[in-house]
Image (cartoon, rainbow, N blue to C red; front, top):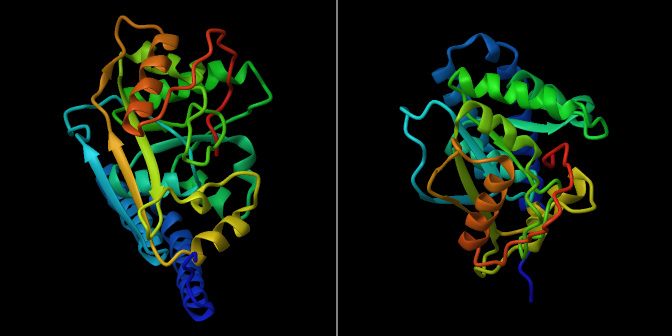
Length: 264
């Protein structure tokens, strides 16, 4: 029988989470005016707080990019809205998200304050603009993360990695870090309830609150040097690296269809 938390525990967690979100809103007001190291520490602390409240234990393997690596682009498979919290808690980074999120209550405000880059999925020409913005952030020494599948998966497979937003890494000769993400339940099996697919944030949160505990595992693969490679080659290499980390078969299509956005 599947284990779930009691109603009292869920209520306590939810209450703590609401207070934590409010604290994040307050912190986000002066956030842009702090130094980069201070911003990174604030980001790590806040994300780690979310995960602790939700009883999600994080493990990461592989080598994180050192401080000497100034231009690092993370490319990760996308399972849940929790993916962002995991990456912020382990290695603070800026994200690329669909423009619709900018208008979401609370979440949109927080995303804007921490420097999220927004892209209009329905506008093909916006790909060129967002690649320039990613390139500017990388050149300034900040890290960026994209989710090139264009949608979330349930963790049992990965989708095709689209190449459109990898042009920024080619242009800046950045280092590309494929990151594999998986969620395990209290029995050590892939947790399907962690996946954010065809549901609302509230419904997803309810499923997560029902879990006694979760384990999130991130594997940082060796960096791929982008110089001398094109974006499609980088997409295939990063897709293969993530698939290997998850012991899955890569999803590969010979015809590359444009993608204007990584998932939310």
